[in-house]
Amino acid sequence: MSTKTATAILPFSLAAKLQDYHQLAKTRLTVTVVLSAVLGFLIAANGNTNFVDLWALIFGGFLVVASSNGLNQIIEKDFDKLMVRTNNRPVATNRMSVTEAAIFCTISGVLGVFILGQFLNQLSGWLGLFALLSYAFLYTPLKRISPIAVFVGAFPGAIPPLLGWVAATGSFAWGGWALFAIQFIWQFPHFWAIAWVLDEDYQRAGYRLLPSKTGKDKKSTTLTIWYIALLIPMSAIPFILGITGWISMGIAIGAGIVFLIQGIKFHKTSTTKEAKRLMFYSIIYNPLVLLAYVIDKI
Picture 1: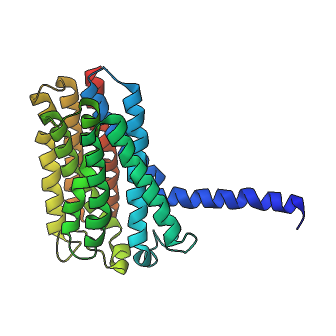
Picture 2 (picture 1 turned 120 degrees about the vertical axis):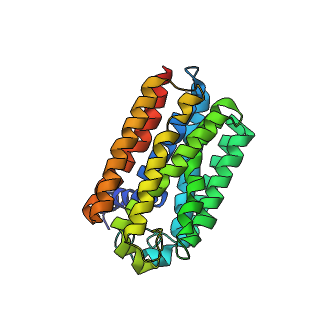
Picture 3 (picture 1 turned 135 degrees about the vertical axis):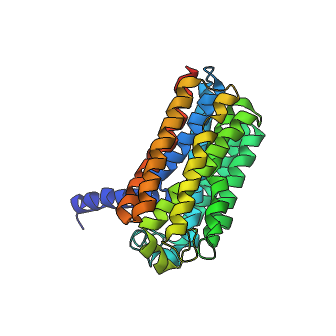
């Protein structure tokens, strides 16, 4: 093999390996999760941002979430092979061995928890560890057993803004729990919309994520509406606690009403098209509301 050929192959192999790690860590999803933590941090900081702490939160949080996502793929590798949306993941296709993925997850998880606990505070480290373990070893296996998996998964899923709050203040407080509660409730319509859209794919792997025993029916859409409706008064709690002002409360309530209108459309039609729209609204809703809280603090 000529030197020129070897040089051409090496960058390609490196690029492919980096792409596999990108998929293992679910980088785009990880970034959105870390964004929630950052916004929680900025809300709690109240304009007095410690940028060293903020960067520690970003790096530590990213590593913990990446580890969680990788462990998820290790545990589900045989089921990922059965679904169209996941059958090209590196562990499922054996492009990456379980051992290699496990080493990455262990190093990133331990390092992430260490950064949160050492450079921020012990509470942040414990929160990161709880989120990692509960997501990977409780939520993940429950997905094939019962729809209660969504409820269990909502706990680690709601930790990011609370983690941001604790990272900034060093303590739990009502403000942090208010952010936790909003993100906790938001996850139900968000995941149920996704589960409706991907129901056939999920069934191939035996996943049960819609709230109704029969899956795609009016009970599932009705429960989705109730959880969206609950978000509207809950989004006013930060204002009631004196953490944010009128403007952000108005934006949060307005966003909740728009979200609810789409939920009602989804309930009336029960179509995949409206479920996709609801999923889109849910993706926008969460960062929009948190960002409104941040801007209200400036």
